[in-house]
Image (cartoon, rainbow, N blue to C red; front, top):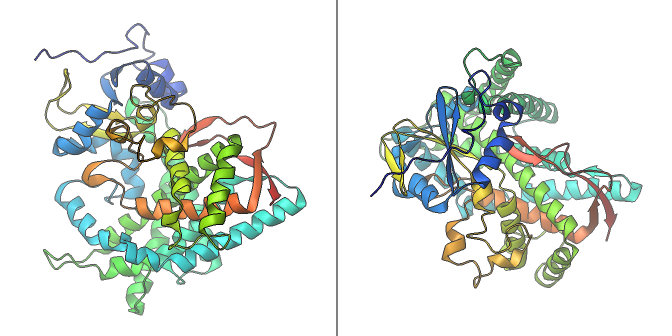
Length: 450
């Protein structure tokens, strides 16, 4: 087999101080544009660093499934480890396998059912806030509202009733500060060591302050020695069947950080893009409402009713196709490898790009059109299934996928059933990368009660 050189679409562009200008101005858009112009694998030279952008589903499968052991999180995840430590998202090897075994039971369907009352109550309060805004003729920033709602949900799922309102607000504020700091550091692997990075001290202080809060919660729960069915209780009680060991306080801290940081922001982002697409497609809203009228009894569907909302689930799948919350992931090679005809060296830095895969016309018919029916059994065939991975593939598929989809279904169903909505006419929706990909400035919606 001939081993081809991976194309570099930017070789004609002179680098600036060893870094290509577009990477400094807007690294996310630079990477997206490069990936979209080529055949699923491109190489970007940035000074001494070469990065490979991967979007072809065959190559993605090689990295995440068939040869996953050769592709680790590596040094590209360093900016995340300051906040997330050695949690599920960032850990590797045997440590990751152990943590996955310990945490998997907390995300089984039976455990999720214990959360139904809490999630429903949170959604009911959000609906009441939206009803007040509709009555007053006041626009709502749906992204901000969904972040607030999901913080409330995730805090309850993690800590049950062990935190009061003031403490919850403190956790929300600190988490927001950490998230902002983290988003500014994601692309620092492209930059030379001398490049100045503002906000580093503020970021470390926010992480330290959130550390103190989380360690205090762990200490209080251990001292109380009371049974609870929240995630913290389950993680405290988890024992590895192979070793008989539980989690240290440090590991508990890392997993709580990971669940909280990834849980509320990704679900809020998915909800926001779903609402955006529904606002642009009233015929889809009408079909969702008709199904809800047939299959559910209340404004908020119950867990038992969710499997019957087949069209509503396809709406969410399609929104996640066009707008995956995490549009890029990072890996590094351990040993050299072949992706198709292309040779990758050892320690190659890789950016996996589901955003581009999900819009590739070789695998999706009319890919820029919002069409939930592409996820029917007849149309969602092997070709398209292969090219769809909003929550990952293989053994490291997102552990919280079921919870995220459940929350999204409940909130979006209630919102669609209760309100008519449109994007504020003078607002331009522009994607903006901040670890997740969100509409810049949020999503202002005008609501009317149905």
